[in-house]
Length: 363
Image (cartoon, rainbow, N blue to C red; front, side, top):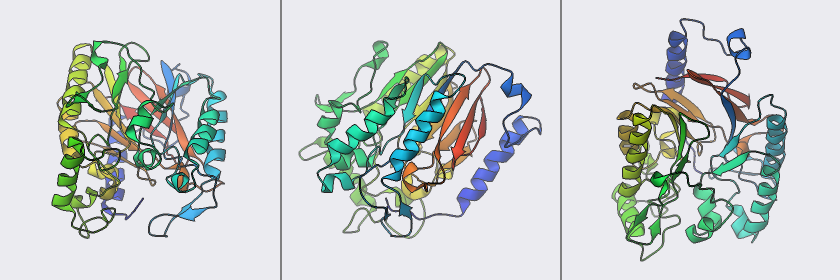
């Protein structure tokens, strides 16, 4: 994936750290092993991992040949994550896999199914339910129809709100929600609902997506961002967006959670806050998602992958935006995953390696 870093991200993270310090009356600490946390049993825990991008090939580099990628090593890092989760005093009841589970190079080597089987076999050594998000590399390897019938289709049905979204009768989106315990809900979004990836002619969503990107990106190669700076850089082929139908469904789910006094975490492969990621990694219509989240009191956190450097921002409505560091660009002597401990008044992320510890107070 093309990457270009922007300096304002550092100040955004610093601002988030200030707000967390202020919210805990000056007791902010990066060492979360405090008596307050250690002596209180969490309601439940879950694991998070992003951008594994496994391939059985030699190490390589990103699009610009500026960042190393450890294709085989990603399997070892996933194995270490599983081992850590298996040793937790309170076992994670589910794992969030935030997308790009195998790398697009597998398609070139006719190894997509074999690579996916290798990673799934490792993931399933955990006793926890795995919830899969779809990223751009899923669509480099498989069609949307194939994904709908694969192990990566982890949708579960719990209520009348869980109907599959359908536009024009046939163009399915992959979005669902679940409640692991009472008063907590997780909503998984399809960030490539509108995209040139996974949509084909004569699909109406394909033509809609093509129109969106061509209005902003005049490059012959649509994986090259338009311009040199700013939010316009998000209009690239390796990104996507959310259809009107999916946004209406999200609003409906969050209204249900508002009325039932639930705490909601929303998940997508693509980040939706400009201060939690490089602009080139943002969802096309990130602002529309933010507007919906900010209109509901139930939302506490938004989690994403895609940007291998990760990021964090606490927005003006008190919603935490967490972008998780990618396994694929993590060297063998480090790690990139986290365990989230959920309490009545906060979630605590305890990261490993490149993933930082964070205290996520509810708004």
